[in-house]
Structures are given as structure tokens and as C-alpha cells.
Length: 315
Image (cartoon, rainbow, N blue to C red; front, side, top):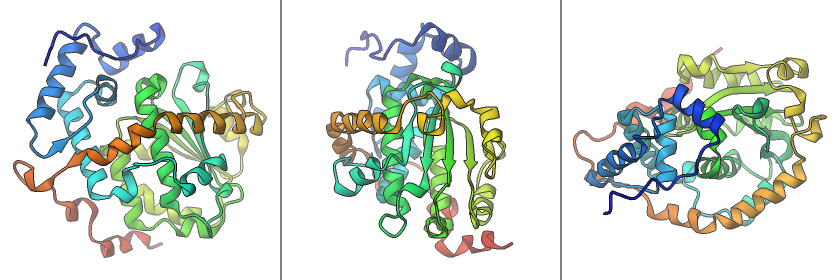
């Protein structure tokens, strides 16, 4: 391989480059060497078959603040979990009927302008727009998952400044909540903390419904203390949300100025079409646990058996 190739990644805006240097310890003069070290390690792993394009790998370096050890661990977990639980994490098609239908509802959107113009990318999930009797939470998660993957590849705000999520439960029902089991919650928590390269900076909950507390109390103890500190429950008080995410950064449907849902659905529909080959290729990447050097991964210890979470449900 020709190691003299300059890194093939998008140039950051001056503002984002400054943030990457100051907050993520990015050193543009070392980027090529960092990526080469990362790729060399990947090539040496008998059990790991990963994407190695620079733009994908730099997301892991940035998400781990340039700790190569943490980036290796994250990338390994990313593929380990996708291989072990493909129905949760490995999206290989964005053209199936169900996927398209859920996306068309506009339930899950990323907004065009980041928070305060140059901060984290803002995502909104309006749970109530997807009927619980027709679609399950895993099918919805696939859409969210695919959007996150596209962000990894093309969203420099998300890669440098992270994501701020809003879960808006207006119109949701208890049936939506009961689709989330403890073992599911555990998988999503481990994935978002230990595998996803994008950093979740805040998770807001608005228009919460009866039964939310129970689910929230199931999730919360599974999270790191750091992530617990980034959860904000606003009940039905919109003004509490807009203290942190000013109204102008919300979509027109909320009275804001940050895009309109039909436009965003159409724009992402096009992205899903453009990324069709990319998602199909996901089927070819992953880990082979029988070839993993050293100790096998203790999935039982990581996720517990189905039964062992029931105790978290008390109270």
C-alpha cells in the first residue's frame, strides 16, 4: 500500500478545525500517521473485517479524542455488536418497504443547522408518528441507525461536536414504551456508549407520557455517570427545552426556523438512495469470534442473560 497518500477526508471549516484541535486533540500534521497506525492495526486483526476508508476511520479517532487505544476498542465493538446482533445494528438495506414507510412519517429527522449555528447536530424522534401496532421499535431503530451511519460519513458537526437528541413523545402511547425490553435497552446503551463513534452530548425528553418514568428508570442505571448527566426530562414544558435548544433551532413545525419536515424527509430519501451500495456492503463487514486473538468476548457478562435484568424493573 502506498503510505504516501494524503488522507482522503473532507476539509473541516476553520471553526470546526479549531474545535477539533482544542477539544479532540486533533493534530492535522499527524493525521496521516494516525490513520496509518489505525489501518495497520486493523489489518493485523484476524477476526476483524472493517471499512478502512479515511473518512470512516477519522470519525472513530475524533470520537475517541485521538486515543488510538480507545478508537481500536470502539471500532472492534462497533463490528462485534453488528455481527452478534445484526437485527439491532447492521443495516444492509434502506430500500425495504417498512424502512421507507417509517422514514416517510418524518418521525426521525436531523436538522440542517447545528445548535447555535456551529455546535452539535440536532436530531428529533417523534415517537407518536409511527403507529405501535404497525411497526416495532427495532424497525424504527434501523432508520435511526442508518441516519447515524450517514452522519458518521458526512456530517462534520456531528463528528466534531456530537449530537443533541430530542425525544418528543406527543401522541405516543404505552404500547410504544412496552416495546422496549430491558435486554434491548442494555444493547442500545452499550452500543451508544462503547461502539458508536459519535458523541451524544444531550438527550432531551419532551411531552413525556404516563409510563415514561418506568422506562427511563430502566435505562438510566445502565448508563455511565457521564451520560446520566446528559439526560434532561422536560415533561410538557417546552420552555425548559428551548432554554437549552432555542426555538429558532427547531423545525418550522415547532415554530422554529430549522427546516421543514417534508423537505428533510425528501432530502434524506435521496441520501438513502445515494447510500444504497454503502449499506449493501455492510453485509460484508464484521467480526469472526472464532478468529479473535486472546480471550473471547464475554457477551453474557456484557449483556447478562435475558432474565438478569428483571431486577432493574422494580420500583
